[in-house]
Length: 335
Image (cartoon, rainbow, N blue to C red; front, side, top):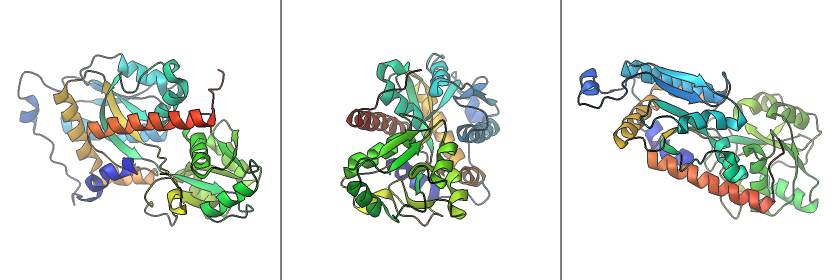
């Protein structure tokens, strides 16, 4: 998977034994007429407090505060599928003092809504860095007579439309993962949208629907209790700690790579030296052992990478999901 592969070397190739990162000295920070940061930096989390995005944002903000001697505050601005918070970032002065958490649902929303999304993820933002990737797991009800993706595909071809799968809502990544699987394998699945992943998972365990894509943290208790059966992970490489194959290992004709990535962006036009400073310091934060352990505990994989790599990821994700949405003829839900 590009999102993980980009930073796999950066994350795992070197770990400081004491968790100490060599940030620039205070003298280096204060050198020159243009000092960044020159005041409080706001990191906007466009989702609710306590969410996975919020936990990751606060871990990064605290370490940057410690390194810079300037406060980095996390501000929660939820609403409109994360658009409200990112809109504030896009409209802020392009000086790097307001940053935003951008995640995969912003890309799926942009692909689904088009110009109605209200913001353009490419035009309105300067990419700083991807920070984590979150693999998903495909789980099924144990009574479904399949133990692999290959067997699932065979059953779906024998009974077109009979296999149902849930999601946390139309047009979200959990919905589109199922559509991607259907397109790649030329099968027909029946989508059942829910208001959240938890009720969908309960219905998989209860046998009301057949399968569901969801995060490792949500799936694990149900997997361990035997209430659901896990078939595969959705990323292109196997996930440490999970004895599961990837979806793509089952002989798909095209790549299958679905990740709940998070990253940091700033307003379009943010100066290159500021972008470089932010990127370098975020890479250092992501390599701290305590930060890595905290993110792994949340079911995410620390990544990182250059601003160009994060920009390429966002662009590619919007294009990929737009193509799947068009092929599946998905329309936005009326509000």
